[in-house]
Image: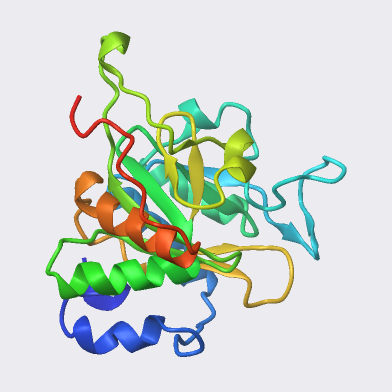
Length: 242
């Protein structure tokens, strides 16, 4: 894919673009929106349509929607999610206002951290030469690190839980690091959030970057989250192998 989504060349020199107040915001037109969605699907991220902003509210019919413009439009989003190009093109053209979610735990997981902690961790990871995959920034103050999934073993007894696991209904319980795996989802860029026009979810590093092993990022991310929370870095409480 083209380096326009964020190539490796000159990454160190571009770090300042990710610091507060230094990253340019560019409007994404309809053609650009569809191209970004297809690029995500081509990278293996399964997509499904999501709600979109209606002013400062959500486009869904739910009164007082707790996650405005951040949730799928169908209860069948897990089975509906797809990487099929033709289907995504139909959705994008027939629902021009829709955001899209990507279902985690199938091909990829997402490590979701507070923005300042995530920026510091990203700089540390790149400076250390650690492979970092796609990274998205959300205007609600989160940085999303896309990784390989922990897997969906046929034998459920092989599945190991993690206290960092985050699902849509447990978002408020995880103000620090959230691990989106099976049964969860995140918005995929480009997406719009309720509020001003610049309230968006956009790529910092695009989907052309290979998905890394989540454990290769986890220590730096947890350490950074602890530092920004004013705490001592906690010892790992998740299994390091299954």
